[in-house]
Image (cartoon, rainbow, N blue to C red; front, side):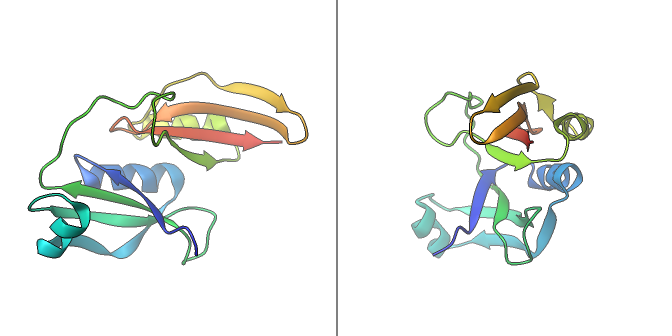
Length: 147
């Protein structure tokens, strides 16, 4: 058994893919997915499901590593933005060399800061520097660096 991917449903999959490629050096794993049909509706439980999107290879792994799957359904159900303490999936995290540098790049590429850059010594583990931010569609991202 192994972890395969995490999925983000987007209102503009091409723009969100571009953000993750530019901000986190993710790589598109061909082919671009264009899926629909009874099999997809049955498997997802979404009537008349039709989607398009891409898988992105996450940084720090080889070509067979886990991916970030960014899809856009033909019909999107809107919702409020997730808060860090809301039940369910909360955020994705990237370990980076410099939280400050990557946060600046994230903001340049259309994302936004959510929390404050914070440092904390964790006994037996080391010092973490971290901050929560949002991608251009409001999904939470944690940037972290350990010393």
